Image (cartoon, rainbow over all chains, first blue to last red; front, side, top):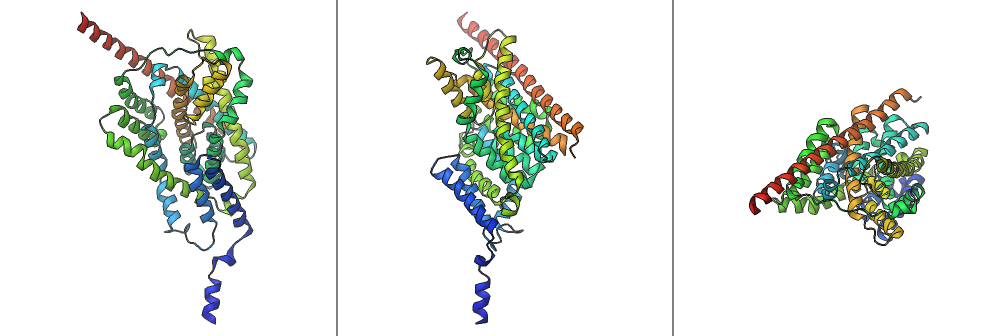
Length: 370
Length: 49
């Protein structure tokens, strides 16, 4: 009889709290969005399941030596996984549009102004300077960078920051158009851009080396992300290491995505996530995104006052990373204004420049705050 | 209590860093493009001439 009582009392069932049930519901919403609605499924599905598992009692998954503890401690806290994701991203990124029209790099920088605007806004709402930095970086629309910065500055906010970043990335087609439309005229959106030149193979091979040199010399704290991003790109552009390119952009990327998603989800326990600060993260996250979009468009308009070869201001909106969805949204908006307007390649310039800009902004935050 | 002096300097130094990096990168990319283009042109001229 005593044994039966002991077995029954060891059941997790008796330890379930209302907070944990609320977290199950949140995880089910994320799983629904990922599976049924196709919202960033590669990340939201493992994150959702990670949340579910992390909120089951007595599993030991999150205790020292537990499986999720190992994923988090060695994968994220040690800054291993976000740079590996960047390796894969580098092996998938074509810098051709940036090399063809280098001034689009500035539009990638402009979008980061929004990151700092949201940073100041989050401080006004009562977040600490570390938390505000993590919220601001959501505006860069780059999931791995948001996770990388949170791991460095505010690990307790990583879950909410990651979910906000990936959710808003999926909402790019809804967030960008009204802001870009509000800041441009129909004539501006209809402006056709010409491809000025096609970069040579040598330029494409030189870029990751030159880029890594310049960026890391100026902002050394961005090295983990930028080094791997440029290495992945060099794998691809050199054409000399097909197997490494393939494994970086496929097998390795998929493996680390699973571990990243589960590890991020596992940080979202009821006591950490169910706080008023989480609501603040989501509100300021969308503000950060809106600021970043607006900054890109406004700088493109400013550039048009100063340079001879004008750009369609819509491509400034692609300066938020969210590759390639932001560029596709810009393409659709351009075609809506003018059926002969093909902006996709032009928008890819600020789009990939935005990835670099966000990584640099994260490095600058780390340099300033640690 | 927010230290607005620190916060503003974080924001300004961050914006300056991002623009500095991307402006230097833009200049480097423009120069590299011009050099490789002129080298390629010279090589074509040599082959045809």
